[in-house]
Length: 131
Ligand SMILES: C/C(=C\C(=O)O)CCOP(=O)(O)O
Image (cartoon, rainbow, N blue to C red; front, top):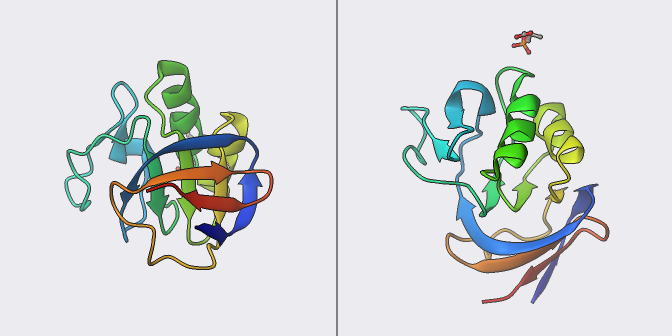
């Protein structure tokens, strides 16, 4: 099954979804050394987003979050791909400069649940549900 979305950052990647209905601040909210969510108020606190496909409403907080994403990519702790309900400049910039495929505005979200395997195409905006 395929879902349409808007391409934001190019590239193709597949991985297991990790989903939250809360936005994330990468500066102070994520540990770039291991990809763990460390924001004590976030529902994903303690979860690791390394090598996952992260589906969140969007980013929040400091613009330095873009550089945290870049640092995560260099550390091999970044998500494989990112889906946002609505892209904003912090995560979009981080994804683009880190070569992390990113899309937003998926045409359907009910299939996008934790642990489902998906492939993200940041060129066409296609989200392919693999499991
Ligand atoms: C460039 C900034 C801080 C730094 O160099 O560490 C300012 C970031 O401003 P925000 O309002 O947090 O985006």
